[in-house]
Length: 112
Image (tube, rainbow, N blue to C red; front, side, top):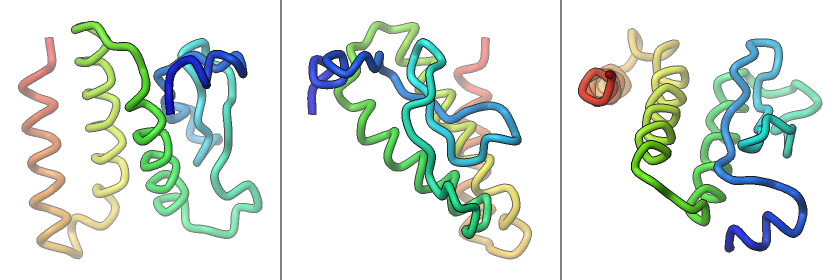
């Protein structure tokens, strides 16, 4: 997959998860346009829809052109997504809690 392939369809990378809590599973491009939605029927738990959307956008973003500031922003966005996915289950799983702590530590290191 290349950035040119996305550009041919007027999609500007990187893709991001929507920050709107009413848009679970919605993925937007760098211009804020909706690109796709995971679980349009709403039959999955929100955490599953967000996780699948994050995996798919992560794969697409491999093709995105990068500069230092963009990399830090994308990294922070990915860590925020990981934190959102793990937070609801962290109390029930030591592995999820450990992964959540790693994500939070990484976020603290890159915060301005």
